Image 1 (cartoon, rainbow, N blue to C red):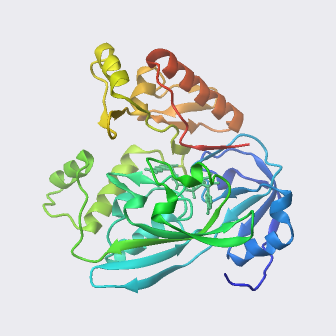
Image 2: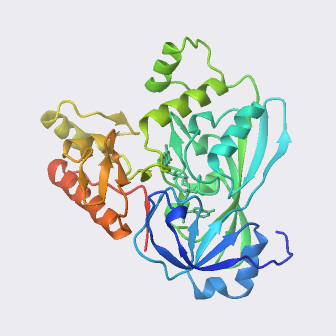
Length: 347
Ligand SMILES: Cc1cc2nc3c(=O)[nH]c(=O)nc-3n(C[C@H](O)[C@H](O)[C@H](O)COP(=O)(O)OP(=O)(O)OC[C@H]3O[C@@H](n4cnc5c(N)ncnc54)[C@H](O)[C@@H]3O)c2cc1C
């Protein structure tokens, strides 16, 4: 770690609405921007982490801020992309945690480095990507993940985590479980492919796109363009309407539970999810429970995708949370299936 100690800038009484994509108007007593790892050491030396449990914030695209925050907010804005080494077939590339994920993907695709093109246009920062092992269109971060560097607020040390130490799962990692709130990711390194690339185009939406655009052998740039176009047509843009993407995870149930549901609801969609397990799309369950496009006060579900909760303007964090819990209860009542939030609830 760079040992030159620089204090990070602290702002007071900050409206967090520009810093969370649900556009909740909560306030933070203290808002501290971290633009280099040594600033974490600087505040550690002032006993900061012993006194407070700060909220770590990246792009705010996977959080629901329920109320005003008395604890300080650490906004991770560490920049920089660097190629660590290049071999014939692969490349190791690292990025500062504050780099915007989509900018990083665009950079890699432009340079001809393959592996994350399917993850284009996922909002947020590189540093948050390992937290829930972001995934889309048949690819997850773990497929190209090499390692990450993190600051440990309990000891003030820096630690490198290899892929085996991250315990990645479906929208999950050790950083959402036993190490929740115990690491601040400062840098992420990926192992990407140089040409010839392996193209992941098994998703129906991608195949349909390539067919209708006459693309027979898609390149990583074609996949990138396809994903951007499909996502723009399907998901609400947080710049236009407040949302945090999928609010709940797709529930994974025992085959026996699924079979009972299938008898009652023959059209229930499903995906294999490992031995004896079936994943059911949460959006379908929520839609069948009557919530798709429904607006209650300032909150609702998106008209094209019931899994996305939207802030129609002026919704408080509490209001969004209560709405989410009502959806959860009604899905439990109708199907007996428990929905777990994918979004991180902060209060
Ligand atoms: C329209 C839309 C579409 C989306 N689509 C997808 C999708 O297809 N697939 C997918 O997986 N996700 C998707 N998401 C969710 C979201 O984009 C990802 O989870 C993203 O990785 C969150 O990044 P962020 O920087 O905004 O994290 P934040 O929302 O700021 O934080 C998320 C969590 O990570 C923690 N955190 C953030 N940065 C750090 C850090 N440096 N160190 C330690 N902890 C940290 C926070 O404390 C919080 O618990 C979508 C969201 C939106 C709004």
